[in-house]
Length: 137
Image 1 (cartoon, rainbow, N blue to C red):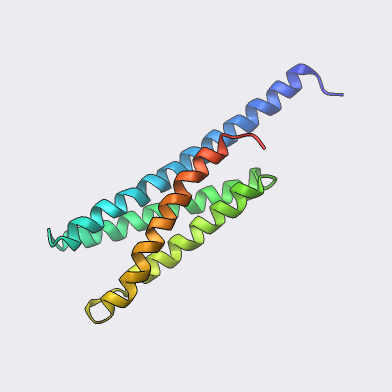
Image 2 (cartoon, rainbow, N blue to C red):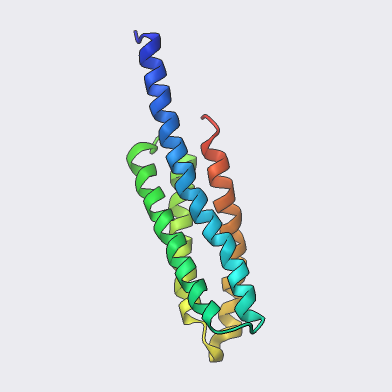
């Protein structure tokens, strides 16, 4: 049987991992949210520089989601909701970035019609994950 202090230590460690996870996926979610702002700036013809900012923002979102994926596989794999959701966000971010890189003038409309709704789905999932992480199974 475990003592009360051992349970507190396990709970504290678990809480710390959940907090780190929430921070990582939260930064990724924030980067995803900013993607909409930056896209709006270059779609509104405010300058080509915003296309590069948008691309770098996508890379930042992918990097933080990837680190969150590693953490969830390593420390939180018992949380199937977080495991599946985080891996899905990471995969969809990579697909989204790939589609974004393909958007050029001749295919712009065909790919944008997939790129923007996928971005909305990513925002929803990325906001749900940190909230879900704080719930105990």
